[in-house]
Amino acid sequence: MIARIWHGRVPAAKGDTYLEHMRSFAIPRYRAVPGNLAAFALRRFEGDVMHIDMLTFWESLESIKAFAGEDVEKARYDDFDKGYLLEYEPTCRHYEAFAR
Image (cartoon, rainbow, N blue to C red; front, side):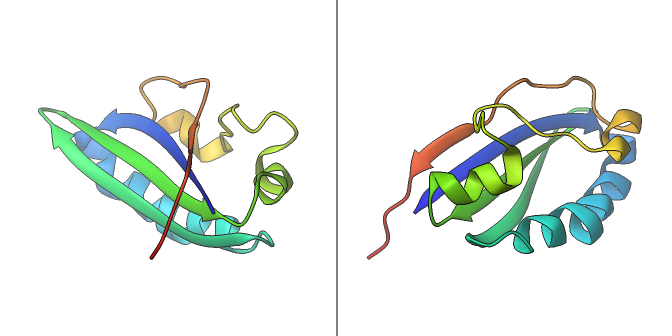
């Protein structure tokens, strides 16, 4: 199993609206890809900035490619991100995940 983590920053004042976009659009899109095992939006506040990490779990790198394209390290962005994100981080992190 592979965990994929994407990080973004949005103004705290727009945080709830952005999180709702993630809940209604991004998470269902992740879940619709064959091989996606789970998708979670994590948030924390740091002053007037909300940090959001999308934590997704996948069966394999091939299933991540079905979502992200051939370059799995490259972050994927949607049109709605333009009105919220303070910057576009270029990559995601991947980890082998182990369960007991």
